[in-house]
Image (spheres, rainbow, N blue to C red):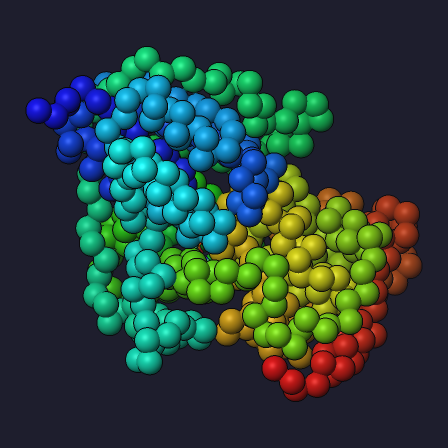
Amino acid sequence: MTDTSRPIVVWFRQDLRLADNPALAAAVRSGRPVLPLYVLDDETPDVRPIGGAGRWWLAGSLTALAGDLAAVGGAPLVLRRGKAEGVIADLARETNAAAVHWNRCYEPGAIARDTRIKRALADAGVQAESHNGALLFEPWTVKTKAGGFFKVYTRYWQACRALGDPPKPEPAPERIAGHTGAASDDLGSWTLRPSAPDWAAEFGARWRPGERAALARLEDFLDDRLDGYATGRDVPSEPATSGLSAHLHMGEIGPRQIWHATLARHGWSAATEAFLKELVWREFAHHVLYHLPALPTEPMQPKFQAFPWAEDAAALRQWQKGLTGYPMVDAGMRELWRTGTMHNRVRMVVASFLVKHLLQPWQAGEAWFWDTLVDADLAANSFNWQWSAGCGADAQPYFRIFNPVAQGEKFDPAGKYVRTYVPEIAALPDKYLHAPWTAPDHVLAEAGIRLGETYPRPIVDHREARDRALAAFKSLGSQE
Ligand code: FAD
């Protein structure tokens, strides 16, 4: 006879939600008591520890998840810190667990770790089952005609569409029979949020982590903003985009929920297609990372291995602090520091500037974003850095170098974005706002600006930097 009191451990990872959570649903369906677990694993080699801003988000997300579990009668969320392999084995032994369920992660280090854990659990007589909670199309399910993987987004999108709509999301369980009795760390002891200095002081005004907040944000977007998405999404001063990326990264909402809610409300239209195509860029990044596990560190185009970077710690620091003298770049970097996010258009501008104008390795930018973005995601971040640097999949060509002044004039013509984040130049007329060094002396004086003192002179001259970048690129030749 089977002992139905043996619990099922649900190992929450990047799926911190109750609805559309196949691992949780399978555990509930089993009829056994469910033991929810989260492991803060900073120790497994090859699994990147969560960055600073991500930890701020995680603290809120775990609190929300614990509350949501309690609301459906679930057991307290068990929090443990350490190498996941050891933690899972110990907990399974302590509680005499019958099975461990989780939703799959696709980072190479996580895949290797989870494979080891599955094997160890099987050896110990504990069933281990993984599910898809994070993606519309798992990386190995979308194939070229030759059976390979895609490197060009438009073809990938077409192949995804040919697969039809992804499965519908499952609702959250109404009741969860909980297993209690396993010891848990106190969330506060993890010090996920900073104290002094509290660099995240403004995050709370912008963000509310958790499943309820994610669903509310989606509803809000579908009600008020989807129609203007295609035209507004490139304007950084407009709240035109969904703001769902951090919720998606932590799995407080799943892409199936977004896909089906969008189509149920609006049907197929130019606006829905523009939005769903962005959601599928997230899928594409995971697809590429799965097939090219070195994506976070190695350029996809091998010739970029020989790129003559001009590593310069001082220049990197000025970029990080938003003190390059190019207002659009500085506004983006300061938005990032203050709010934990940066508008997508500006992410492209600042990434191009670091790599092409300053000739700093894209990996240095990727690392800074990893630590400072609340939506930091290994697949999306490394994929987009490579794309911006020109060495990645379907990348914009290296020789297309964003002019940060022209980008500012085009996407922030009235200067609303720059004035929000670079207040020391706010009094400049629009005409000079994106290139303060071109303003006549009396205009600068009237605006209270002393270049080099109250706001930096440009760290590099755009034309010279452009020529230097093109020369560096040419030095690579055409070898692959
Ligand atoms: P929306 O425009 O509302 O898009 C909906 C969803 O689609 C997003 O929430 C996101 O999950 C996905 N998405 C949109 N654009 C992209 C894209 N280019 N690549 C992958 N997914 C996309 N996004 C991250 O989630 N994490 C990162 O670490 C990250 N790093 C980036 C680094 C650089 C250099 C650049 C240029 C882009 C990066 N992006 C990253 C992609 C993009 O900037 C953000 O996903 C987007 O700004 C989030 O805002 P949103 O949720 O309002 O997006």
